[in-house]
Length: 298
Image (cartoon, rainbow, N blue to C red):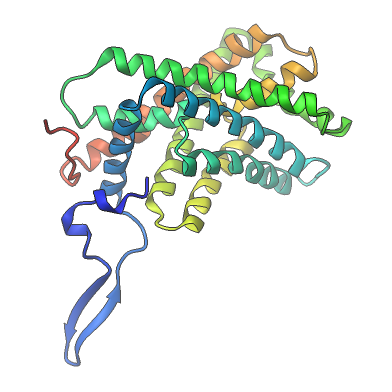
């Protein structure tokens, strides 16, 4: 997302600003981050770039993003395993999972929940919707994420690298995420609302990551919202794909259809709402007059 050459001309000369006072001119450094209207513009451009990629590239990048989710899930459990202090436990677990998102954001991989922010930002600023391409892209990214997450889980299982304490901790994670099963229909809608909150935060992780102009800022921008959604047990479909893939292979506490229909499905619907409306639409509308983009031009 860090494409300086695509920024508006009036932003390219920010490296130095000058003010006049009685002593003459004073040099001041330019901003070390992008302003919100630029971020929304970048969202739209990246959404357009993803949409225009060949299908094979879209699907391979979706597989890659899904694989990072399982790595992030594993790392979150390994970091927090054995920690009894809740605050530190949540912090370490969130830091572990943030590694997966950092790999997604910086590698340009296609994550379903990030696309829920990028693609609407493109569509809100252009005329004419290529419906077939859009739906195909959304579905392929979702399926690719699931397959990528499951593939890495299979490889980890075959590697026999993880010890029994890891799987005990994994069972606790799964019980925490699947607790809504006990709430019946109410639980299904609770997951949906939780999914809205989760992708609102992940949308802001993408927002902060795009704002940063250096790699350190991108890591920090990713970590803060991810730590919050992990600590709050907000249901993020892409993250859960990583946990559920490991859980499905490691134990039989839950069936595949319970994972999909009683968590991933409502969480995904909530993720669409949280990313598309509360991040993409909200900021696109708020900064409509400030966005300088060619996305809506023929």
